[in-house]
Image 1 (tube, rainbow, N blue to C red):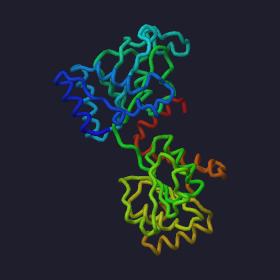
Image 2 (image 1 turned 30 degrees about the vertical axis):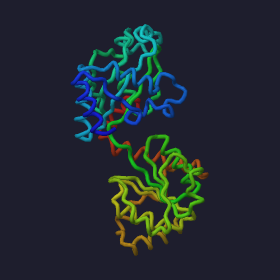
Image 3 (image 1 turned 90 degrees about the vertical axis):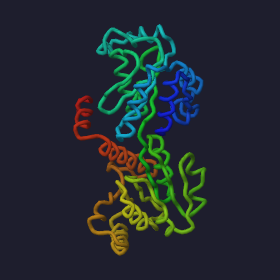
Image 4 (image 1 turned 135 degrees about the vertical axis):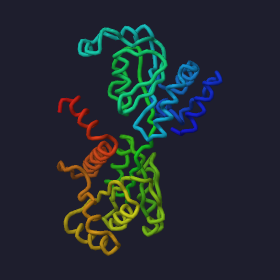
Length: 327
């Protein structure tokens, strides 16, 4: 999401003009994102845009402020499939806790929601709507289609965390696919064209080096995550040194104790301090007996998710989340 997009929407609404909402800015309505769901499509996004008016300006103004403040916040969409069913969706005994009222009305709605669960919308919303608004802004939601007559979607107002995978090993192949699937922006670096091919790494950014010394010409985003997964561990020192030089929020490296000792010596010779070396997660990933490339990818990406969770949410927010799950 670009700041200029929000400004254009606000300006159009202020002049009584239907804003141009594109799938580039709201990718949850893109055909490749929606899959076989006909209720999340470019045509539906056009319908929602046509229904916006001046009353929706505060929603987008709040989104703009959240972006300026670096808030964890989202623009969400209530997409109505059947208005009568949406209002009457109270048929499940388990969800009676949300009251005996379905959705507040049978109309599409654009809303703002942040991690503090502040909601801004142009029309009233019911307790069931509130539940769905909070839920869909957790990311890919488990409950978008829980109630009849409507579905939900959202787009984040903050940048995805960058994951840089140094090396195109088999474990890297599995890690790249899984990391992209859970919402990271993935880059893979290697010096062998055959290993870093599009077939092995579809739909992620691939960077082919002539020599791993070129790695130090690349500048990742601030607070990026670096996974050092080089083939045969041959360029692990370069990966660790590069991540450290760019102040990566997280650096993880595979390998056994003996290999780590040699990489340690080379990293210290390369300018890392002992404290910086100890900050490298070794071995990378959560520990639960993973051995195959696919299993290792699960362990690695699970750890990345945990790091992102702790980075993005305060201890108070995490405690509140754990309490809500009964843990």
